[in-house]
Amino acid sequence: MSEETYTTISEMCAEFGVTPRTLRFYEYKELLQPKREGQKRLFTKRDKGRLKLILQGKRFGFSLDEIRELLDLYYIGDQRVTQVARTYERAEIRLAAMKEQRAELDLAISDLEAEMEKSRSYLAQHGAREAAE
Image (cartoon, rainbow, N blue to C red; front, side, top):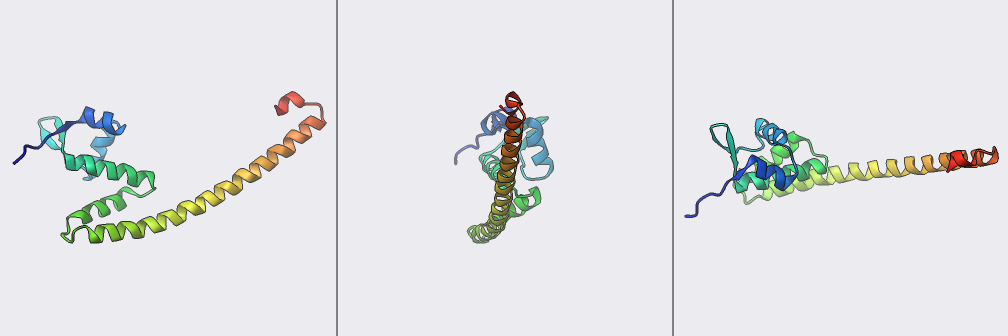
């Protein structure tokens, strides 16, 4: 049997680009369960995998409650079928919302560019060329 290797909080921070406060917060929210030796936190390979999924889920816009629910499905004993299916369902919903946000943002950008062009033209007509550059 191989011995478990541990990663310190500073090593986790360096590897994942997070702060110690972030890791403590995820521990408080019961998303991570590092081993404790006094005040020292020691993270396992499992914690690393969970942190990677937490950060990915946050990047995709999932709430911490959603992330916790999806992570906890790993342990129900059906070879992750439920976890993957539920994650896929949530991802479909999130992707649709992101595409809608992108369409709204594209429209806002287009409108802003048009307004800026009007302003640039107005300023050029009124001799304020340097203000429009």
